[in-house]
Image (cartoon, rainbow, N blue to C red; front, top):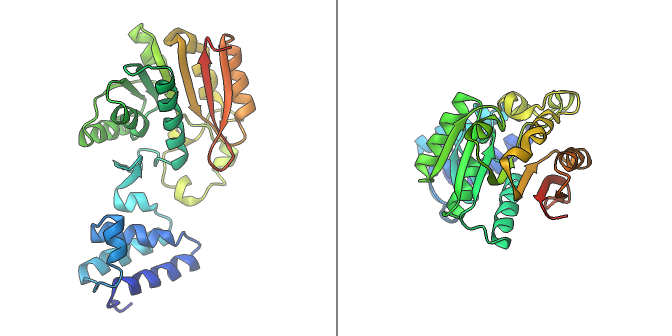
Length: 289
């Protein structure tokens, strides 16, 4: 295609192309902003600017790739979470807006209970989005991030370094590294893999073909293996007045809540809804019945 003269013309072409290919048209704005290296305000003000040849070639190339099913975040190399850029690639789950609500819930609980310097463990940290955000939003926290996958652990450490976040990292499976530490935490938070295999195969190729199965698929028929495994050992690592908070699938609230209520009879277990009214979190407050 001949190079458009102005930015807005390139965006118009890209939006039409993506619509024809069943992709989100807003991705055109994200990719153009990335290649122009502007913040959102300057990007919107630049729509009638003349379009540079190099920018056009790079933008057009990425629009075609996104149309073929490559996630935008893998093309730009990052995703924004709580207003900060986190490096991502195929080794880690791309941070989602619903996970921001999990973080907000934990921060609200910490503030409500005056636990300014609490110890927090993020299980299955992936890109490090939860752990890093918590300590940057509340710098007095003592945050530990646990990750089984070496490549993901490296990415989380890279994000902590680039964002200047003081986070301790442990390698291992779920709560096992915490058990080896022989201490208790004020907060355990996790966004574990929970998608049943039968549902994973039906996911959009943007997710299924490009994000790590290890971070998405929960073992077993119902995808709840990780919750059960964590529940079995949670009482030994969570303080008597602590909080355990988990992201869940939108139809898993009742089952996950029951798993943790049985494991923590002394806890108040609540299913919480996201901004769209879907079951997306389970909060377990020990000593709150």
